[in-house]
Amino acid sequence: MPTPIFVLNGPNLNLLGVREPSIYGAETLEDVKRRTQARAEALGHNVDFRQSNVEGELVTWIQEARDKASGIVLNAGAYTHTSIAILDALNAAEKPVIELHLSNVFRRESFRHHSYVAPAAQGVICGFGPKGYELAIEAMADLLTRKSAR
Ligand code: CA2
Image (tube, rainbow, N blue to C red; front, side, top):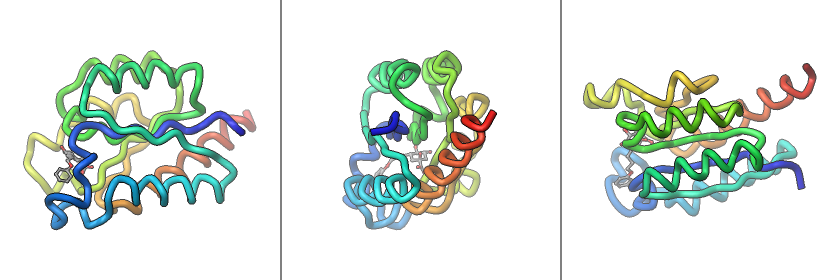
């Protein structure tokens, strides 16, 4: 098995498909995991898909990615807008990072317009719902192909 792409999900994303379908859609996180894994496998990658409501656990997983992941796709949830600890961990990981959001955060409240994650990310995908996870895997696969060609 190749080194996995870590797909990390932050607080409240375990509620997907259960609450607020008008913002986040009807798919559960388990559905999103399945479509993410399917896209990764089609592109010759595998994913390690995780969710936590705990900021420190996300930091620990990002630290783990330094040795155990090829890249990090991160939907940090609300920690996107608050967490210097997650930014520091991403910078220390020295891996390609894609910031991901289901919703278009720029159409929402102004406090969602700032991201602490973005300075550590190669790119940001937001507003495409669960499809964004597949887009993020495609983008990460391209980044990893370019990296291995260097
Ligand atoms: O759009 C995204 O993916 C977000 O990262 C989701 C976060 C939000 O704080 C960010 O600004 C944007 C919230 C995740 C909460 O997910 C829920 C899902 C269903 C019901 C309630 C919350």
